[in-house]
Length: 609
Image (cartoon, rainbow, N blue to C red):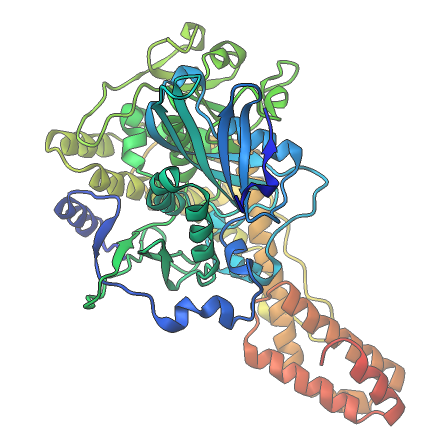
C-alpha cells in the first residue's frame, strides 16, 4: 500500500441568554445541524493554491499528521500508518501516541469511542509551527492560541468482536495529530471519515487527507467551507474581537444542490452541562480550583468521560486561558508519569484525566480528586455527588464524589443551582443547560477579572509622556497591595451578587500560574501598544527637517533605527495602522534621497524600506 512506507512500531451568533436557551430547546439540542445546501464558493475552495502554497501546506495549517494505531500480538500497540509520509514524529512521540490512542483495558469500550489527549512535544526537536500561517494566531482568543510545546490527539477508536483474529477482537484507532485545540471540530471530522476508513482502509484515508490539503487556511472570523469526502462542513473560528459568550453560528444558505452541509456552532466547546451534571452543586468550587491552578485529578470510567470533563474544567474559566498543563487522558505509560506522580515534591499545577484503577493509589496524595461515574445521555440525570474527605478515597471503585478538604472562598450561588434544577425537572435539553452554565461561568470570571483589567490599565503611561525622540516609556510595576486597595470601591461586588472572601481569592490567584500567564500576556499587549504609539509619534514629526539640523552620522543612525522599527512592527505584529507604516516608509525614502549618492546606495540595500 502507498501508505505503509513509514509504519513505525511502538509499545450562536447567540443573543441574550433567554434567546440562546430558547433556540437550543427548539432545536432539541443537536450538537450539529445537518441540512442540504451550503456549497463552498469556488474561490474559497482553491484559496490554498491561490496563496501559492506547496503541496501539503494546506494540510499542515490544520493537522500535523494522521496516524493509524493497531494492536499487534507481539508488539502491543503499534503505529501502522503515518500520513502524509514525510510527517516527522520522534520515537518518544510515537510511543506516547500508541499508548494514548487506546483506552485502558479496564475501560471495556466496545464499539466506537471518541476522545482526546494532549502530549508534550519532544524536547530538542525544531518547533514545527507553520510559519506561513502563524500570523492568524494573533487574531485568535488567547485560550485558542497554539501552544508550541504540545500536540493534541483526536481519537476514533473501534473495538468489535472478530473471531477471525487471534485475540477475538478488532482493535484500531484513527488519530488526528494537531496543534489546534478545536475539539468539537476535529471530533466531527473523525465522525465523518473514521467509520468509512475502517471499511475501506488506506486509499480512503489518502483521499481524505487530499481533501484537507485543499481547505482554506484556518482564518479566525471567516466563515469557512471545508469539504471532506463528499460532505461540506461550515465553520467559523472565533476571533479575539468577538464578544465573550457569543458564538457566530454560520447560517445555512439555501442553494439548490446536492451537497450536505454540517454546520458547527462551535469549533472548540464541549457539552459543558453534560460534563458538570454529576457535580453541578459544586461547580462554583471547581471554578475556584481551576482558576487558582490547583492540582486536580478526574477519575473516570473511560477516556471519553475523562477527556470531556478535563476539557470542560479548563473551559469553565473562559475567556481566561488555563495556563497550566492539562491532560484530558493520561496513562501510566505517559512520558511524564514519574514527573507527575512523584511524592518527593508537592503535586504540580496540572489537571489529569485518568481511567486506570492504579491511579487511585498513585495519586491519593493529590489534594483534589473528582471521581465520576458514567456520564448519562442527555435527559438522564445522575445522582449528585458529595464533597468527601480524601482519606475516604481508597480505590477507583470508591463512590463518585469530589474528594477534597478545600474550603471555597466564595459563598455558593443558590440561584444558578435552582435554575439548573428547574431545567432538569422540565427536561430542558443539555445544550440549553450548557448555555445557562457557560453564561454563569462567564459572568463569574468577568466579575473577577474586570477589577484586575481596570488596575492593569492604570499602569499604562499617559500618551502625552510618549516622545518620538526618547525610548517608549515603561509600564508601572504591578503592586499587589495597591491593587487590593482598589477593590473596596471597584471590586467584583459591582457586577456579581455572590458574597464571600473575594480578597482572599485574589491573594491566592496572584500567586497562581494563571495570573502569571494572564499578566505576561497583558504586559506584552500593552508594551506593543506603547511601541505602536511611539511609531505614530515618529510619523507626525518632520523628520526631514530634523536631519537638516544634524550630522550625516546621526541621520544614518536615524534611518537604521527607523528601519529596525519597521521590522519590529512586522515581526511582532504591532497594532499599527497600515497608513502609519506607509508614512514611515515615505519618511525613510525622503531622508535617504537627501543624503549623498554613495550613502543612498548602501542604505537602500540595508533592511527594508
